[in-house]
Image 1 (cartoon, rainbow, N blue to C red):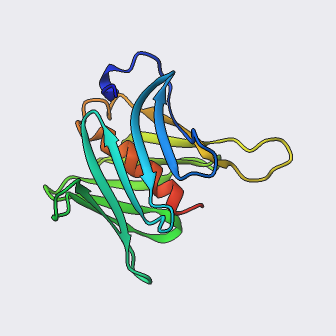
Image 2: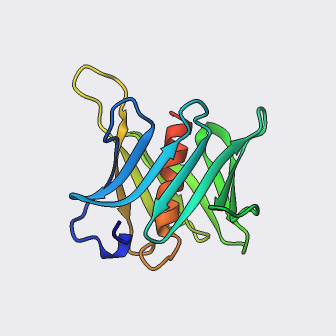
Length: 170
């Protein structure tokens, strides 16, 4: 698996290589940069693998939900996502770094914004085919902004964003 920073062919895109199997890959052309697998019977738990690291994501709670992000094999949260209204929320890392998760556009796009409100990453769902009103959840284009490129957490943010889009189909 190639590191996200060494990808030779943009754009980056989350794809569903096996229809109806909850496993996704982040591609740059034919190169695979990340894999995200949802547990088949419990789609609130995912494992992620990139060249930069391995993580687990787990949604907990019923009325008040959280998403816990951990390094694989570690029992302490690296970060926690606190959902808000209409799919929005705040991602807070253990060291205090925070990102806001917001709708980017009405075309199925969502973005992470840094502490200063600058967009660092946007994910856009594949557009709906003619005659269908909703975008598909099997493919999403990933756009990392110039402000986001230097952040070493970008591979993790890319995976968290896709997980949130799969969890909350808004």
